[in-house]
Image 1 (tube, rainbow, N blue to C red):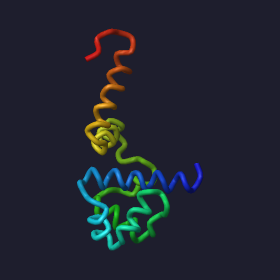
Image 2 (image 1 turned 90 degrees about the vertical axis):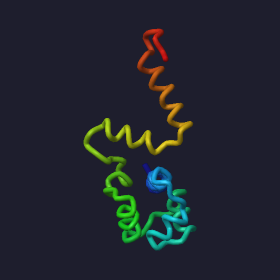
Image 3 (image 1 turned 60 degrees about the vertical axis):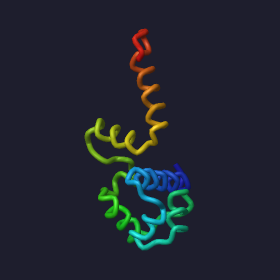
Image 4 (image 1 turned 180 degrees about the vertical axis):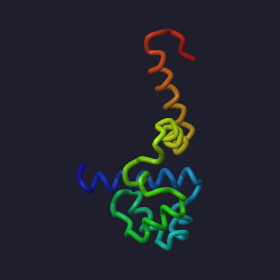
Length: 112
């Protein structure tokens, strides 16, 4: 994975958490002393936040940096799955539900 991919993934995780918290980019920018443009660039994978800004983002979301960097929140995989699904839109959650249902019932005809 190259540096650009890492920026995109980090930015995506920050954006998902921000949306899950019901915050706008402007609200996050104000909370962590950055400009709207800087938050947009971070979320779009165009730039990394400075370490001091990254720490403020983690504090604002009350999250350990592990999730944003490595995608790991908790040791319990079920809690990770729940958190990931909760960060999706309702339409995305419906799609995930359909995929899970199809996978779980792939060998029978008892689909919901």
